[in-house]
Amino acid sequence: MTKSDFQPLERLTLKHHYADLGPVFGTPVQPTPLQNPHTIHVNPAVLALLGIAPQEAQNPDWALLGSGARLFRGSVPFSMKYTGHQFGSYNPELGDGRALLLGEIERDGKHWDLHLKGAGQTPYSRFGDGRAVLRSTIREYLAGEALTALGIRSTRALCIVGSREPVAREKLETGAALIRVARSHIRFGHFEYLFYTRQLDAQHKLVEFVCAQFLPEVADKSVQEQAEALLRFTVKRSAELVAGWQSVGFAHGVLNTDNMSIIGDSFDFGPYGFLDDYEPGFICNHSDHTGRYAFDAQPGVVLWNLNALAHAFSSLLDIETLKDCLGQYQPLLIECYAGLMRRKLGLATEDDGDQQLCADLMTLLESGQVDYSLFFRALSRYFGERPATSLEELVSPSQHGALGNWLSRYDQRLQKERQSPEERCRNMLRTNPKFVLRNYLAQRVIEAAESGDFQPLHTFFDLLQTPFEEHPGFETWAAAPSESGKHLPISCSS
Ligand code: AMP
Ligand code: MG
Image 1 (cartoon, rainbow, N blue to C red):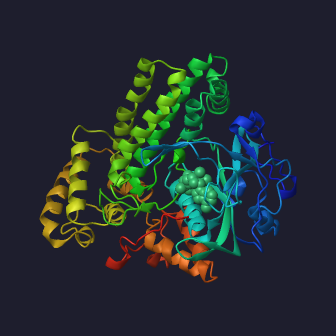
Image 2: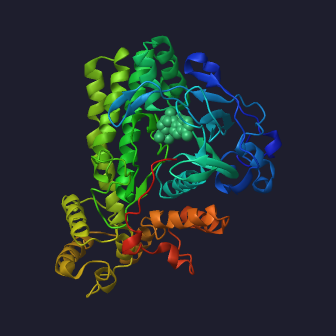
Image 3: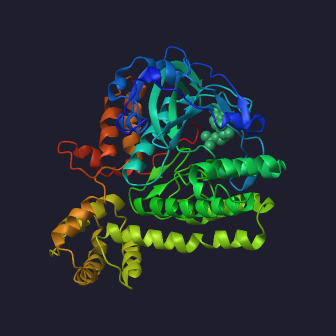
């Protein structure tokens, strides 16, 4: 099939390569359909990615497909087995407890997994009901789009469906589901499971499975060489991922190893948050009492997770190789983060003082309680004017002097650039978003949806897919929260 060929939904046929790996890797399970489902949204960008014709967004079958009442042709629904470290402790009982891998789509030489989240109980449900609620489903749906639009690897979703089925969380909510789409649903925890249960042949098979998809250049190599290539790949992808999160102000919230994708996608969204004020210690998960997953703890905790993954690879690689692979993480992260922050600052060239300039700005933003995204957006329109009113408005008055000093250094640094100020500002406006998935806005969308109004969801979804555009008339969606809208308690139940 060529890129231009779009097919109707009814001809879409899934493969089931993962399910074919065998019973060690999970259990075939039929979804338990949600009752009276209705389609809430179909994602046109993901339709295009999968080669499904755009007019299929109107197809009434999404309600059935998204609720699990009907299966795609060729689908072999499969609950994947994995384990993982949750808040630092190993949990051997995990697996897809409420989601099913429906199968894979091949398009332009790439595989896309389709994964139905909220599909009912599985052998790995433990005490859970197998459901997802509307609130968390909307949050996951929006997060995938917001991060993707910001250039950060993420799982996305094809569609979202709702129902009137009551689902008990802290209060009674309604059941919903989404079809998650990703190049892979294999987690660090998949490898931990096979390692801790000493199923080493299966572990080799999984290494080969992932390499065949993402590292074809090592396909003919020994399993040890493949394992090393894979670990290096995951370390690199994870470093790039965290650099991206830190640069846009995203806190994942639950960075357990079962929520870490082997290909470095942002994965399994729970009580995540984008920063409003620049607050490095921001904890978005209210059950994270120690701040293990605080915003500024993410680089360290992802390295912790990579160590756990490397330990699972110790059946295949010697300690020196493992250390060497892990050793790539920090320099890659620093380089990648520095590059992203340089772009945010509009610096096309590199200079020795850039990191300090950036670090000093972060200190200023922190002490001035400055909105992170609004500041960079305003800086994208800065031409050296004094007073820098639009920036000063964002900074508490006690910090205006410090801001002025920093801007003078920034002015000097900009003189070393060859690009014109206009070009710099144009690039910065394409890097620093106007529209950010702020918690208080997500909450607004969720509350409307819970009362049956999905228009705000549609609006916000479109804005987040194109967050660098001005969208005149939608200013309220670009505003920082009032004091009471900051630090809204976000339930970690989902
Ligand atoms: P999460 O916190 O969503 O990353 O989930 C952690 C583990 O709990 C995974 O194995 C999930 O499949 C499982 N899980 C979460 N919520 C439910 C639920 N409502 N029913 C069954 N299993 C669940
Ligand atoms: Mg999870």
